Amino acid sequence: GTLAHVETETEGAADSVQRSRLIASLVPILLDSFDRHAASASASPPILRDLSSPDVDDAAEAAGAAIVDALAPASMTGRDALSDKAVRHRAFVAFLSEVGLYGRTRKARPALADQGETLAGAAALFELREEMLGGRHTDTDGDGRVPLLEDLGDLPSHASHLLERLKIILASEAADASPMDAVEAVVHVVEDVVEHRQRHTDLYDAPATAPGYPGYASPWRCGEDFRHVLVAAVKMLSQIDPGMDDGAADGRLLHCVQVITGACLDSYAEDALNVDHGTERGPALVEFHGGYHRAKVSCISLLQRHLGDEAAYEASMTHFYFDGIVNVCNRQKADVHFLGDLVRNFMNNKRDSTGVSFAKFILLWYMKQNKVGEILKLAKYCPEDVDNFLADSPEISWIVDLENKRYDRAATSLTKIAYQQGKHLDDTCLSLSLAKMSLILAEKKKMASDQVLSDLKAFSEDGLVLVRCQETLFEPPHEANRRALSRSELIAEAVLALSDASRPQESRIAACLAGLSAAEVATGGGGATDAPQHAAALWVAAVGGERELWTELAIRAGGMADADLSAALAEMVQCRAMEAYEAGRGTDESRPDLGFGSATVREAVLRGVDPVVGRLLEVSCTLCS
Image 1 (cartoon, rainbow, N blue to C red):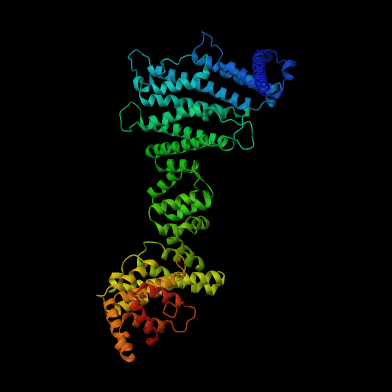
Image 2: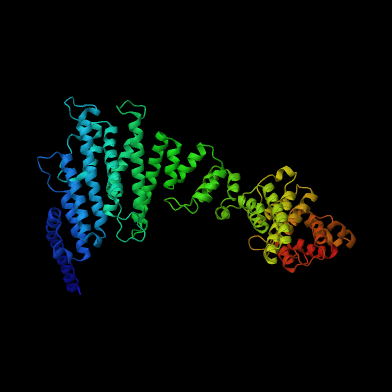
């Protein structure tokens, strides 16, 4: 198996070498046929007509590259040599069309278009060099030369080195010329490259968009290599102070900002068609969109700084830079209705490079600004987005639900708010009261099943019971102005109150009844299954608060008449609370029995007190009943 694998790899490598040799042999034949055709309009030789489409693709691209990097005649200036190459390259593409070979190409088309742009960009540098030498720029060396473009290397013979030359120009600007001169060289290249593509679109017939075109490749000026040059130029522009006397007029700076930022952003936008519809996924895709976002931040910041809000807004809309849109609208005092119209009419379902929709971005922005009213107004323009956004924000969603007469949903949100930990008692009371009112309306409108409405009603009513318990436990009323306590916390507070012998009997009795009411609440964690356990703790605490009285009475009980014993027991907190509890409960069978009528409660209490007192408690059950 290993040997077979090695043989397969060897065969593949051999095939690759053989194919490279084939293409290399076809290039001079193709160029010779082109020259002969130009001289006499002769047909292409049979060897070319019989080629497969992949061979035509590779041979055409390689022949075009040979023209781009052909040795320039020593007798010609750099600009003339590049102009001559550009004419020859276009004629070569026209030749491929005339002899029927261009129609059989796919990937060669964008490659040939890129080669034409490369020649146009290289020629632009020589054109700018001549303008500089003509005196438009300052002679920094005093010898009639401009160091920035003094040495353009071997561009006339190797135009494909254009990108490397641009990188050198930007990297050496600090020592040789002003930042504006360096950036302006890139601007000159960009403008001529774009003009070339627009002028010769029909000739190259390269695809403009990616979807559905498997052979698509981004234009050379939108590729990653050239984008590095553009990003470097943007960074350089951001460091130029408009007020500095660097020899550049304001018009030059503004023009450079407009061209470079536009080219940089368009580079990402064009390449995004290729990236998003291609097979690239994972970290590479994340890095691309991260770079796109960083370019939006820097480019649109430059546009706003030098060209104002209108230019920044237009670029932000074009490239879905939501920060830029919102910041301009905020500076221009645009109200929420303007943004709402944008969401509904222009940016519907649009997402930024991080995948966030414009509607969600606006909602998040308003939430950070604590502008709840604006969020509610947006519900008119994008109700589904607002609903989804507020799904985890019941503090706001209930208002939207009430405005839209969704009373069952409003009640649900209000109940959630009431049961949140750390809520102020007054806020909890208000939320539960509003929930109860919403439920009344929901029942009238039949907005939910009876079971759902019944459950919501139980939650709101039980919550109000807990509010009343807390108001009872903490007197005077101003002491109740604290966070709303949970069921278990209220029962614990009631036990403490009952155990405090210094408190008046009436206060302790009220605390016992409040604790029992809290124990009855069934819509908390664990329901009311633990109610007997909590009730027993309350009764034990009631006895414990008068432990000495109970002990003394237990000693004297044997020599007392029943009437006297009954009268003495009737004055005890436990007996008075038990009497009040039984009277309040009455014959309501839906309420659990948390008094001594419950064997579970009674047995738990007797286990929690002194046996002597326990026997007296059993007597009290008979005498006080």
